Image 1 (cartoon, one colour):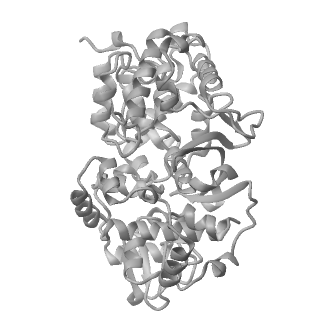
Image 2 (cartoon, rainbow, N blue to C red; image 1 turned 60 degrees about the vertical axis):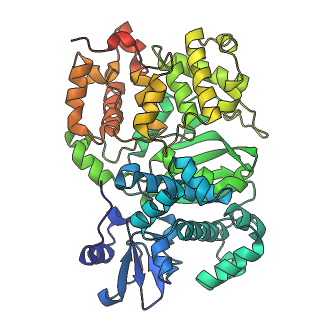
Length: 506
C-alpha cells in the first residue's frame, strides 16, 4: 500500500471528526499555538487556515512545531509493514524507534537493513521528508518526554535510555526544541514505582483482544508465558550495550482508551525503547484493521480487528515452529518448557509462573543436537534448531521485520528439516509479513474443505496481500470446531504441521 497522500481537505475532516483511523498516519501543526497534534486530539478543533499537515512527527518538528502535551504524539500508533511502499525506509524507521541509533550511526543502520548509506538517506528523505538524523533526534526527544512524564526514572537514566550521550546534551536539546527543562516535564510525571514501569501504546480500533489472547494462550510455554484475567505476561531478554537485560512484561487491554497498557520490570529500564518495540511487533499495533478487514470480507466479519500475533524474538518463533512439526500443540509446549528450563537464563526474581527467559540463538548454537534429544526433541529437529541458531548467531540469517521475506524464506528452506510450513510460519510471526501463507497446513485445508495444497494456494490468492491474517482467522475457526476429531485431526490441531509428503503432486 502506498503512503497516504496528505490531501489537506481530507486531513482537516479527519481532525474535525477525531477519526481514529487516521491516528498516527499524519500529524497536524497549528500555527496559532505552535504545537502539533494527533488527529484525535480532544482540544477545540483549530481553524482550517491555521492547520498544516505532516506525515511524521519529525516533519512537524522540522517546521518548528512542538508536541502537544494533551494528545501526546509519542503515543500515536505506528505503521505496519504493508502501510508504506518504502519497506526499507520503514524498516529503518522501526529500528530507530527501538533505539538502534543509540549504539550505531547511519552507516550501521544501513548495513543492518542491507543497503548503502547513500541509498538509505535517499529512501528515507523520499519517504518521510526528513533526514535519518532528524527523524532519530525527534524519536529520542519523544521517548525522553514519555519517560519524564510516565516514569520516576532519574533525569540521568532518562537521558541514557533515550539515547543521548550526556545529561548536558539532553538538557540543551530539550530546551532548544521544546522550550522546556526536564524538571518542568517531571512535574507531570506519573507515580511509577522503581521496580515496575508502566506505559500505554495506542492502536487503531477495533482490536480483537480476546481472540489474540486465545491464539497465544493455546501455545503458551510454562515458565516463559502466563495468561490470566484478560492479561498476557512473559519473560523478555534483550541484548544491548554488551550485556543481556532479562526481565518480564505484562500486557492489559484498556478498550475505552484504545491502548495496550504495558508493564515492564525494572530490570528492563535501560532497554525501554527496545522492549516497547517488541510489544508493538507482538501485538501488531501498526495494523490498519479497516483496510485488512474490508479486504478479507466475510472471513473477518466474525472477528473484526484480529491482529497478526507477532514475536518478541524471531529466533524463538523459529524454534517453536520446528519443535511443533507433526506433533500436538500440547506436546510441543511440554518440549519447549523443558528447553527453556534447561537452556534458558533464570530470572533474578522469578515468580511461580515466569521463571526463565527463552534461550537465544547464541545459547542454542552451543548446544549439540544430541543434547536436545535428552529432553525429548528428536535428533532431526535438534539439527534443524542448531543450524538455525548458528546462522542467526553469526548474522547470516535475520529473523526480524527488517529482513527481506522472500530471501529469508529461501534461506530457511535451504536448512534440512525446514519445510514450507515452518518457513511461512516464521515469515508470518517473526518477520510480521502480512502476505505469508502456510498453504500446506492441514487445519487450514480442513476448515475450507480443500484437499490439495495447490487448491489451497489458489483459493487463498483472493486474500493477498493479507493472507497471513486470513490464516489466523482460519485457525481460529478450526480451534472453535466441535470436539471429536479423529486422531489425525487432533494430531495437527492449530496447524503445527510440516510434512514434505503433503506437497501437492497433482
